[in-house]
Image (cartoon, rainbow, N blue to C red; front, top):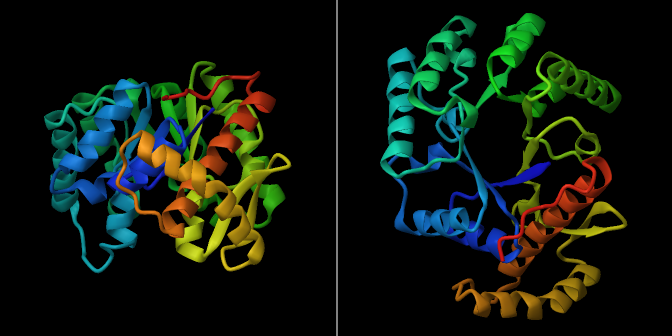
Length: 298
């Protein structure tokens, strides 16, 4: 299983992930609409040459419901965004995974076929992740599994639909089993999956999470202990002691790779979040994926 750390849009996040020796990065095209910056390309190229995997999310959800939600978008707008997205990948020789434009929330399910057709024509189908949503129903899920080699199940969407942890776990397990039954070679991505319980099963290929950034977002430091992701308020003596213990390693890695991150606790804390989720990835692979190795970059 490959756990992709989301938020690899900026140089400092890329550097922290690299210092943690984590090989799977996820970024979003919403942050790159005006083209890739030199600093982004630098770390994308460095990590790619060393065997890292990347996912480029379309950024459509952010555009429609997040940072860009103040605008109204029509089919023409989304077609322009789609071609800019695909052309930017080609222009910069990006050759890793991308996520389709799942436009159903704005244009309806009927338009999915048109947009998916564009991706089939313009990008490698084996490196495109096609996302199932509830509007497509059971038949739509079956068709997705039959047609595409790499699909995604949106965990945040299922969490809204299904009430209770048991219902969510049962449904995801069933969908994974169903997909593998239809296509034994299928790759399944658990989109936006931050729950360790959901990740602790076999049969899927990858997932992604922003939870490693919780220290900066919510003041909750992350570390891995007793086979679990553990949390501590960054204002507690226990966390302050922990970060002081780990800071010498952070400084040694910063110097080793000539990285310009400053010595503030914030950067060390964020790096530790990457370290925690890299350890989680290794634990899950050892227990549920027959010891499958997490790739080492250095």
